[in-house]
Length: 324
Image 1 (cartoon, rainbow, N blue to C red):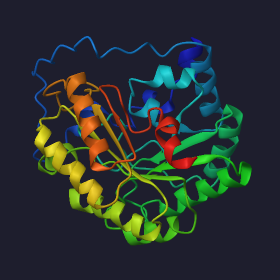
Image 2 (image 1 turned 90 degrees about the horizontal axis):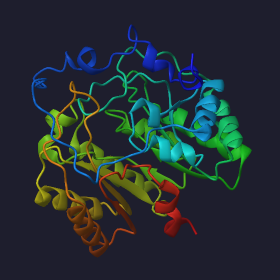
Image 3 (image 1 turned 120 degrees about the vertical axis):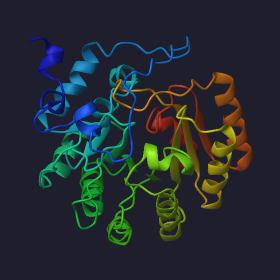
Image 4 (image 1 turned 60 degrees about the vertical axis):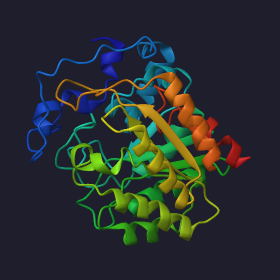
């Protein structure tokens, strides 16, 4: 067994409990992914390095030792090699099984296990072992929990603060569907440095791209948190190339600014497998550049816009202007 396989994320070798691809998406009522659709040829600007090297193995080893997951691995992020090579990772808490079946996402679906009460402490120890100064914590959707996992996020922040008072913490939360009040009550007691929730796409595409989610519910989450914590920067992101128009993207950007959202990420959607939603088009670097300029004019404090930009890609650099 190679060193890389030895440190492979457990969810990648557990198909009986972790549904992916066709097994995951087959029960999405009304959403049919045409497996015969011929994928668009990737343009020259979509290129990433293979995730190899000693630092990549080191990060994976630390994650496995502390029974932790990273969204980098679970969502098959194209920037895994670069981020792991620089000693950074976005941690995914509350397990590696999502209660939803979004057809753009490669995170596994299944019946989640009970929360690991030791996870916050294990997270803090792993962050210390990696020597991180900035950490991003996200999670799967946990629609089975009374507060959607809000209290668990709070406990993770508390554990990290206890170990390192100078650590900067960004949380990338789900929409807490139907449980926003309970989740925000918990999160209002323990404050991160950045509060992030991704809208992912434009309202028209929600029934296909984010079944089980609601655009206005997600927008309200960002608004409510800003009302509770007006001094904490809020952040959101969109994937492009799923069939949206640039006019629709601009409209979403305006709505985010109306909710006083401070930071924005815009990146190209990349199809994890043929069982996922197809890429409708590859947005050009020039278009991303234009959206970057537009976001700056709208008043976003930071706009990261480019083909390989992801919500937590270079998150420390994105947050730097706000956290000095």
